[in-house]
Image: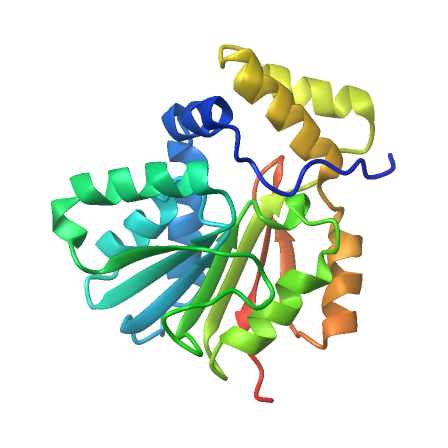
Length: 223
């Protein structure tokens, strides 16, 4: 099945609110557990950058799991960032350690020039030019920094996409079901991601971590 592009930003207020209120506990918990297990020897200190942070749940979870870290979340959608900042304001246990920044990769203004870890969840499939993500990782991750990217994997055919939506989003609002379906069609296959990494010169692993998710991970190379 050929990839079908979707909009790069999710900035409709109703769409952003539905996304923020959705139950992504399973996939977001998987993300945090993957980061901790794949980088068990990480120092657990410094600054983490979350690219495409959306409504901020993963950024806040990272700050909770790694109490000696600050987390900066970057997103291009003001509606998403408003919800992320509201969520952070309610998370007293991470007060002062989570900051959300509006901007697009590449070239977004950030509080730091480089980061001790770089992560991203469900950004890759939104990008019309996916290499900007890998270029941003190279530019922003310190040498040796842990990098974890998780995203959807494109099903083999349209029927497979509909089956995944029916399995995992049957009771969700229509806007979420539609977004989920469109995201599956816009996602990449593992070999496509491997080709992107080869082009970028990034020696990262690509693995399926669920029936609908890919994890791409490794240590940022030296310049």
